Every structure is written in C-alpha cells, then in structure tokens.
Length: 501
Image (cartoon, rainbow, N blue to C red; front, side, top):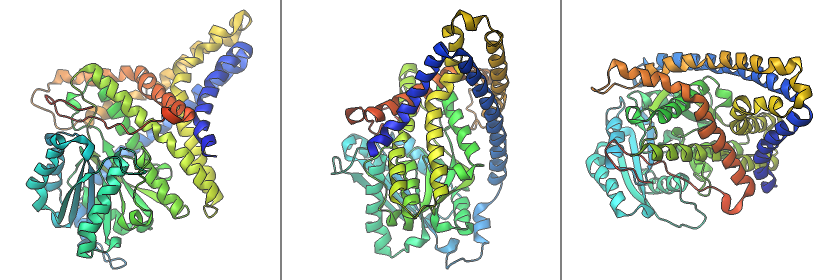
C-alpha cells in the first residue's frame, strides 16, 4: 500500500502531461476547451489569492501594533496556567552555519519583549559537521548561555540507527537531551511548556513570544494545536540576486496568505506546539526529510484528527538564498525548492495513517486527501499547463483544427485571461517594496527599480524552480530506492563569507 501511495503523485503529474499531448493530437477541440476552462479557473484562483494576500497583510500589520506581552499578562489564569508559569523551549538545529548568522539570531532573542528567564534554549550541532564548524556552538554558549533560564549546547551523533541525516533527527535528539538535562531535573510541568523549532537563521520580532503566549492562553484547544508564524525570507534580501528575491518574496506571500486560511494551514519551517504533545507522539520522526510539516500529521493521527494550526499573524524572518556566485545561488534555490517539493513524502505517511486509524472522521479524511493531491498535482503541472502546454492543440491539432474558429480564438482568449491574472502581480510588486527590511546606507531610490522588474521573471521562476522541482521530487518518490531524496541543508552565510554546501 505504501508503494502505491508513493507512486500516485508522480503518476497523476506525468499522466496529466501525457494526456494533454495525446488529446491535443486526437481530440484537439476537447483539449482546447480544457485549456480555456483551466485558464478561467486560474484567473479566479489568482483573484482569490490576491484577496487573501491583502487580507493577510492587513491582519499582520494590525497584529504587529500590539504589546502582546502586556496583553498576555492581563489575561486571567486558565487551567492553572498564566504567563507567569509558561516556559518557552527553543530548539535550534545547526549545520555548518557561520558564527555571524547564528549570532544574529541570538541577538534578536535578547531584544525580545519577553522575560529571558522564561526561555530555555537548546542549540544542537552535528557531529558530521566536524569540530571546525561546531566551534560556533561553544562560542554562542559562552556569549549567550547565561542570559536565559536554561541553555544547552549539544552535538547530534552521526549514523544513529533508524535515522537519516537531517533536521528532524537533530531536533529529536536535542529535545530529548534538554528534557533530560533541564526540564525533568527542574520539574517543570510539560503542560506549561511551549516548544518552538527554529531554523538557526531565524530571527524573532520583539513581540513574538508575547503573541505566541497570548495565542496559547486564549486558544479553544491549546493542547491540541500548533502555532504558526509568518515566515519572512528577508534577513539578507539586499544581498540576493533577482531570482533569489523573487522566490523569497513569493514564499513569504504564500505564508501571509495561508494565515487567513486556517482550515488549510499546516506547519511549515519555524513553528510552535505544546511540549506535552511532542512528548506524547515520541518527538519528531528521524527517518523523514519534511519534519516541519510531518509533525502536524504525527499529531493529527495520534489525536484522531483532533489537531489544528492556529495562525499567529505575526512574522519571524529567515534568510533568502545567497551564495558566493550567481550560478551557485541558482543551484541552491533549485535544491531548496526540490526539498520543499519532497513534502510529497507525507502522502504515503498520511494516507496509510487514514486507512489504519478508524477514529478520524470520514469528512476530515476526504478533505485532507483532496488537499494533498490538489497541492502536489498543481505544484508539478499548473505552471506547465498555463505557460507551455496550453498551445499544444494549435501545434498538434492538425489542419482541420487549425482552420476552426476555436483555433483562431484560443491564443487570444488564453492570452487575455492570463494577462488579467498576471495583473495581480502589481499587488506583489507593491507588497515586496513595503516589506523590505531597513535599508542599508548604499540603497538609493534607483535601487527600487530592479526590485520591481524582478517580477517579470515570474514565468521563468515558476517553470525552473517550482514545476521542475515538483516533477523531479514526485518522480524520484515514484521510482523509489536510490532515487529518494535525503535532507539537503540550505547553505547560509553573510556577504563576504563562504557558504558551505
């Protein structure tokens, strides 16, 4: 059964591509009608996305105006919990990141509007990185260790049984160590701990922990919920090339938009959850790549569907892809997108879990099954259909089709629909300029121009970094065995530093 579900996404993607080719030859009229209907569908979807993006941005700006620590402090105690007895456990896995990248992260922690004596931090390096890179671990511990309620520096051993080298196995190791060394020894109740897992380049905004605590203390089901901030990929945006900026802002906008669709929200990258639930499910899996989204499904299956994600409408910021050379950056962008597309590995895990767990309501199984198939099918095929395959009926339909009225009107109609849809990019241009972080001294008015013109590269970016990465990931899972992807760590460095691949 697992192999069937592994083959399914790739089969749907390649089957769609093959069917468009075949229908364009033998049934060009039907293929042309499909193209028109698909373009109309995407026009409506573009309007839907733009509306939700604007709504998400408005909510985020309103949320960022509040003093959330003060608001959380004013809340009455609930089930014996209040801001005075809530602890935050922060898990930072690291691998070959430079000292300056990690230090920026910890500097942002010390500036947060939240008592540092309520933050427990574990920074976990990798034995396979070598002593040279893990030296950063000890430097950070020496500089920042005394500032928090608790600080643990640990090294995740390599080649442990049942593990793949990756973020999930590192996080599981780190969380277990800090549980034994700090939490259990101090007798801190698991129910009073919120655990946040952050990429080591993640920088928190001042009100993040206040906002998270407030959300936890006011949630209808606080112990059965994950908490998702908005991931900005803007830390080093001024060092990024146009393609890197485009991907960074596109991902940021997707995260903003999803905050107003909580029914479809799944944990992504940096996020938070109750520590008690993490212990209940046995921590992160150590044999999967997509641990950030899979942790949602671990909880969902363990608690028989009684799990959801609460949007915080509040950002954290991370790095865009920046490497010493243009082509290395392009290579890294593709690898990062392919790793995200490898989230298709969740499909066999989730679908098998749905079959085995009879307690999850049928309507939830149907809903999430559709969501999975729609997301990954669209990831691999949508841009390809819109930008390239839509003209196949004209190319392969033969003379009889090419003299028809439909043949004449097809390119005009599809171009009109796509031009209307692409006009939504104007919203992206405006928001990308608004969301730029504080500008360096060298940034002048003329530098806004490339930040605007980069959006003309959207078609190329979609085909190269989204569609191709999605198709490769699903094809690899379909083939299985040696073709399966392992975890690839996105290199992170600051300008002038060498990034490690």
